[in-house]
Image (cartoon, rainbow, N blue to C red):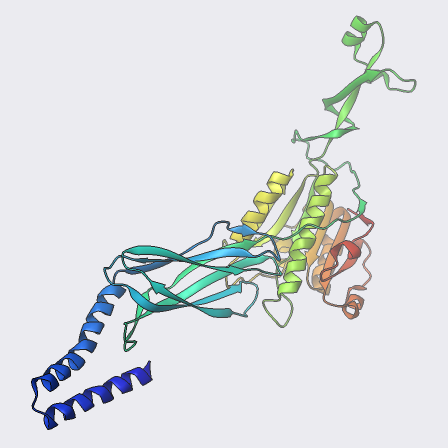
Length: 397
């Protein structure tokens, strides 16, 4: 564009000399046209820039990992003048990472029209992809002037985590929420407040379980099977604090979130309602959510993503334990990216739970040795990045 301006200045100088050397009317007309033309181009392009707006259009705000998703840049020109050349700088990044990728879009802009330019993105890791356009530049037909035609715009796309199959045992416990009315649909239990099923009497059945009224009508003993409560104080503690040198370590945080999702799905598959404790960066405090079915889990994942911020600072988990001392759990599971001995020791000594687990995400086999510390009641399991199913085997939770 600078070269075009220099050439046009040289052309004006040539026209001036041509007018001085030749007294023809044509020389004067040529000089006026060449001198006025940039002014006209400037005015037209300036008016057009005031009438142009841009926005992003994303059909689906939640997408899967490693799947291309379309994003449209919508450019609306309300003026009567078309633009032959325009360019927009597009930037995108995952909020868990400082690395920003960018590319340029080039397009013409029709007069009195709204047009869409589609580009496709994808992500190997879960998180929030922020897409920005710092500006849209437009050029006059002679490419002498360039104007910034629209303000900075942005949009977000949630790249959802994937669940992985894990194997293990869900232990049942006497610690239940006595005020809850959530019972198993597939297993009988010992809670007399809810009848799970009715069946014929078998030798050895307790007499206090006989349904006497129904038995008198059937002329046979009918026994009540009680229900099994599944609302037990089972907690997954999701530690999203980054402990690595790179404050936005995508593979590690991706594995931390997917480890939580896999454990939560495993508990739901075994009819174990549970809670999740996490740091809500948008509210700057630890929060707790209850999960009893897949719908609750999906809602939580959306809420978790909404809680993320660009500059998410997560405090150490020990703050939660200090503020919430004296809690009692049937099962407590800690998920983190670091084997912080102080935090693990706090869980081992001060968290009252029948079963205590810690799943520590590690980047390589060499890091597994860092998780070998022995605790009296805390089971530590290292989880290799990208190998959740292989790492979590035969767990007891």
